[in-house]
Length: 405
Image (cartoon, rainbow, N blue to C red):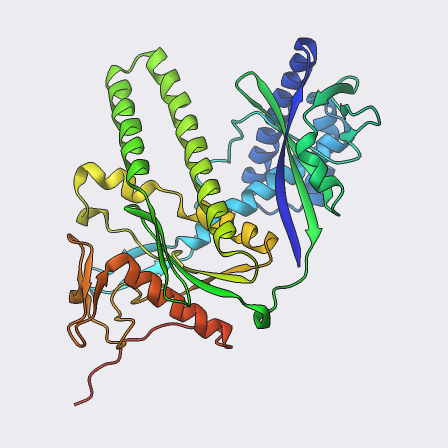
């Protein structure tokens, strides 16, 4: 299987070089918005070849882009629309028929967009070997709208990837504050996961009180507390409320910085947590997670002051980071159905919604009397589904048996 990574390379341009890079970023963003408007106005019915025929010369002449950058603009716009279309399909529009009292859903597509996608963040896609490359003296050559520039970079981080069979690809040029980065795409061909070499099957229940509750085949449970995370996020929330109440221009600027800082911090928390999980269980581990794509978080059942925290933590980001880290360590991550994992007793298999006490975070089976922490119960059930997958089950899930009269 082919595994991809995004490597972050810090570069150090001089002030004149930074101005050149910024000018290129601005032209690239304007070009992307121009192509996006054209694609939207033509009802998303243009292929890359048709966009090239219609807009290539204009991109070169009006925005002063080099040949490869003009092509990259077309690729960037089409890729963004494809991503948006995928996200829209994951969340169909649901409505209730007032006459039949039945719920229906309609799949969304790009026709639901009311305006073209806008490219606000300044960035440039640079193709390896054409727009950027490493020089023999250790510097990095980067194409600009004028002449290529040669900048210094922190290459120590790259050594373990450049000499271990990783293939470098397109890089995104970004500016964060006064610092400049290349986010480099890298791929490597890795052997497929062998189910016959499984060492551990670990069920993972995700949440906010405990970011992760793990249960393995030996019956050992590990809890990763999220209380400190919740406390810090509530401080961010109170600060945002204070700045929003002010409403001044300086307050709005600070709001933007706070949002970016919180996102970076959340990203780092997920990185640290997933790395700890992979290091703890090692090679040959199957990490089993619930498939949360169509699961709705009922915020109306949450205390009003805590609803923001309940609905905005990035579980998908955690899932993505765990998946690629598990593959790199010789394991894998799979998703199983989330149905009844919090209601089922892992000892006797009975399913009853009333067995779980949300307020006390406690589970008590009414059939066999088994008791435990409700997050641990979820992890135990998820681990059992993972064990079924390892033994050959294609889509393991729990089903609630109806009483037979």
